[in-house]
Image (cartoon, rainbow, N blue to C red; front, side, top):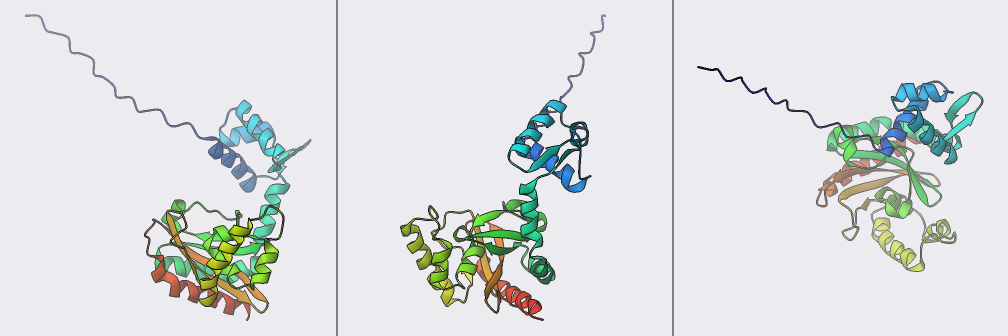
Length: 256
C-alpha cells in the first residue's frame, strides 16, 4: 500500500501593515525636532524616523516651504511657524499653571475631554487638553487655532463681551457675512444671560457635544474651560455646574 504524501500546510500570511499616511510621516519628522537636538541633517532625520532618505527629503522640503522647518548650513531645525505656536502656548503660562489641577480634577470627575483656551483676535487657541483614553476621540490639539464662533469655548468667551466688542473682532474684511454676524449675536444672547455658560446648540452640525464656561479677570474674559464628549446625544449638560465651578476656581487662583 502506497502512503500518500501529506499536503504541505498552508501558511496564513498576515496582511501587510498599512502604509503610514502623509500626516503621520510629517508628525514623525516634527517629533524628531521637538524631542531631539536643535539641528539635524537629512541622514539623521531619515535614520531617526525610519523613513527612506528620498521621502524624508521630499517631506522636509515641503515643511521648509510652509515654514514649519528651517534649513541652513547646520542642517534642519524648527521654523518660525512652529515657534509662533509655541509662543501662543507659553505666553499664557500663568493661566495654564492656575488651571492645571482644575483641568485634571474636572477630567476625573466627568471622564470627558477637557480643554483650556484663550482668545487670539477672533479665534481661540488651545492651551491645554486633558483627555486620557478619550482624548483621541476629540480632534483637538494644543496650539491649534479655530475661529471663536465655531467653538463652544469661543462662544463662552464672546458671551462675556459687549456686542460692540464682538463686532470689532469681526470687522476685518472677509471675516464673516452680515447674516452670520447677526446669527452669532442671536446665539450669544442666551449665553450672556447664563453669564458666559455655553452649550452646543441643537442646530450645530456636529457629532460632539460640549459645555464651556469663561475664566474672567478684572477687564473681561481671559479664557475658557470646556468639556467635550463624542456623540450627538452626549449628556454634557449635567456637567455644566462642574465646568462653571472649574472656571471660577481658576479665576480665583489667578487673582491671588
